[in-house]
Amino acid sequence: MSKVVHLMPLWFLSEDVLVDPHYNELQSDLDFLNSNVFDYSNPSTNGDTEDLNDNFHEEMTPAGVLAGVCLLLAVYCAVDPFKHSAISEFPDFESVKVDVPPWSAIPVEKDPENLLQKSEIKFLNQVQGPESMAFDPAGRGPYTGVADGRIVFWDGEKWTDFAYTSANRSGLCDPQPSPSSYLKNEHICGRPLGLRFDKRTGELYIADAYFGLMKVGPEGGLATSLTTEAEGVPLGFTNDLDIDDKGNVYFTDSSTKYQRRNFLQLVFSGEDSGRVLKYNPKTKETTVLFRNLQFPNGLSLSKDGSFFVFCEGSIGRLRKYWLKGEKAGTSEIMAVLPGFPDNVRTNEKGEFWVAIHCRRTVYAYILALYPKLRNLWLKLPIPAKIHYLMQIGGRIHAAVVKYSPEGKLLQILEDRQGKVVKAVSEVEEKDGKLWMGSVLMPFVAVYQLD
Image 1: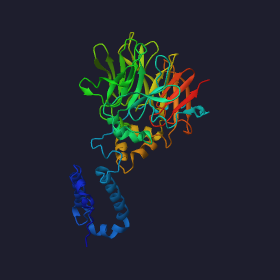
Image 2: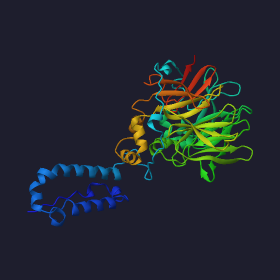
Image 3: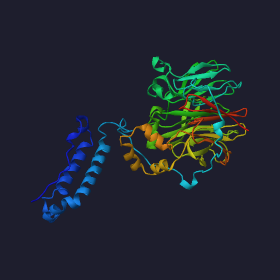
Image 4: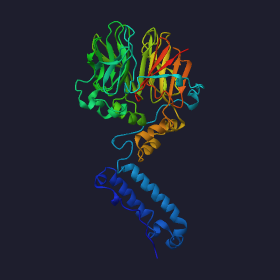
């Protein structure tokens, strides 16, 4: 007596799944397995069917069950029938290998005293997601962009509205309980990220994630758009900027594929559509200085203006781009960072403070190297927030690092438990204090330097 074992057809999937382009391919694979592997009535395939039948329960059941489970898991991951995965809304999602440095090159230095825990938390729940800290030419401030699209100003007693980037603000931009509550409407309300004052004119330049490079006069109000594209390609995720002594603006476009509201998918994918650009205020031209970058983020000019540095977010590096001298127009790696960087700022000594969103974990490092594994993992029914927590080591924490112009690590300050400071986006040094913003937190942290 022969026996035929069939893997179940995909009848249990919903109608919207059955029209998925992967369905026919998956069903074809099942049919092939049924007819060529699991059909024990076919002697040409299975040899002595009687022996196989006799030993089926003893030898084949565990393997068959395991194969069936693995196959069903593969089917689930491929079709995502219930749209529970972190990438279910992104049918064109593709993971690519991240050009991470060798593990041995990643700095291991730590702050044994967790000095950032001595920071003062200011303005709790008065500012939602203050990414960037800026002080005007008169030293007043800080000014910061918040999650509802406004740029607000601390006048010494209270926060007041200073500017905004969207001309279409509505009730969708009204106060919400947390910075993440605004995420789905950022493209309407605007999301000001990097801020810089032109010290000559007092104008505030703004990198808005959705509306591109903008500026507003010393009196504030609705910001004016300067550029929204380069070489015919729209800015997708304008992130940070700096201004030289001639008024040229250098800025980053983190991705032309993913907007900021999809920044987790950008992080997960590792895609390399990011750019560093230059805006010439005289000619109104925007040129691309550097392309094919994996999540370029913060940018800051050197004290003498001979180069600027920018953060390669996915890779975890500081890169130097020369503007003057024999190396003008070329770039070089300045430093390997201990984690995923956000903004970078230059202090009065010409040193660079880098905000580290989180340290790089072994988990994140392995996934960066193996995009197929990452792609499969992201198709499991695990929410993006859980993937994010695994990426950062399970706990939101804080680290800021200081580098010399040559790329030497000078100082690291941490709150590894995230007891006081968390997820720093920018560090601005002023009058012996570090002003730290966070795109995820509802406060500003201030640390007193020795």
